[in-house]
Amino acid sequence: MGRQPLWRRVGYIPQVTYFKPSGIRLTQPKEINLAVEEAEAIRLKDLEGLEQEECAQRMNVSRTTFARVLNSGRQKIADALLNGKAIRIGGGNFEMAARRFMCVNGHEWDVPFEVMIKTPTQSCPTCNTPTIMPIWPWQPGWGKSGPGRHHRGGCN
Ligand SMILES: [Zn+2]
Image (cartoon, rainbow, N blue to C red):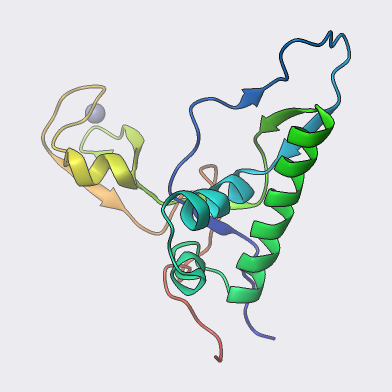
C-alpha cells in the first residue's frame, strides 16, 4: 500500500492533560496514556458528533485507521473510568494542523489552525514586523511531515 498515514492530523491539544480519580488514595496511581490523536478522535466523533468519514478526513487518515484510533481511545477512557485509573493525555503519532510562519528577520513561530481562523496572523510575535510569510512544507520539529502530506493520496 502506498499510503503511510503514520501521522494523524490533530487540530486541538487539550489544555488539561491529566485526570485523576478523586476520593481514593493514589500514591502510585495506575495511569493510562491517552495519545493525542486518540483524544482528537474522541473529540471529533463524540464531542463534535461528526460522521466517521469526516473525522477520518480531518485527521488525514483512512476510515479504518480512524476507527482503530477511536476505539482504542474509548477503551482506555472506559478502563480509566471504571477501574479508577488516572489518564494522562500526551504523545502519539500526530502532526498539528498548524502553520509555521517566518518573518523578514528570520524568526519562526507556529500558529495553530484554530487560532489562525479567529485571529489572522499579521505580525511577528518577536519583533512585531508585519513582513511575514507562511512556510510550507513544515519544518521538522512540530509534528512530522514531509512534502505533499497535505493531500490525501492513495487509492480509495
Ligand atoms: Zn521577527
